[in-house]
Amino acid sequence: MSILFRIQKCLTIFQLTRAWGLELAKGGGEPEQHVHDLTHILLQDIVNGHLDDSGPFWNGRRSGVGFITANYKVGFIEGRYFLGLATSELTKNWVLHYVVVMKEAVLDFASRHEIPPPSWWTDGTSVSPDAGVTTKGSPSIAASPMQAPTHSARPRGRKAKKLNQVKEAMREDIRLGQETPDGLRDILEQDLPAGYGVSRDTARRARDAVLSELPTGAAGRRQGRTGRA
Image 1 (cartoon, rainbow, N blue to C red):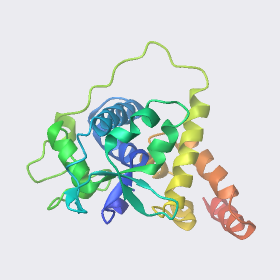
Image 2: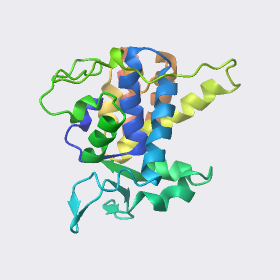
Image 3: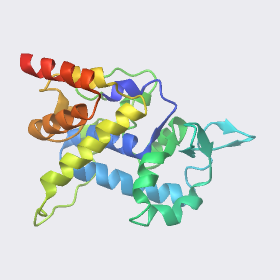
């Protein structure tokens, strides 16, 4: 699914860290932990202003961070204004889904932290079918994975939490035009988990739930597609 991001000039923090974190996790470790670590480090850089001057030119200066306005346009703003929002449990979800990071800022972030950049935004590279590893001087994902801390116990309700996260991710992809209902419906079941970093069963249940929320006509097509699987 990350190949679909190639033409995008920016992505929300949620979209970026989920797709990029899954790429980094291919070198080993827990995918969900890679996404968590990447989100944490990116938010730190944003609120500390490290991405403010690494984006495209806008009003005479470079701006690497913005937010989605009410009319679905991007409004640029300095990262420090998100400090209170990013540290509050009540507003952090808004930050993840409405704060966007520009392509230029992401590539600069990757260079500073010495990690492979997102494959879909790296010029002059080839993309492998499963994730895409850069072939133009960048280190391989396997050579420099982010370190994933170990956990002694798995919290209760984790499966339900993952299911809800995937459903929200699918809704967000559709809402922002990164995916269409028909496109989501037609992804082969064996390919579905790779785009969301969960098991096949969780991905399938999430997709069924999201598609069931569509109008009756769309739901009927979904049932017909499932019956052929």
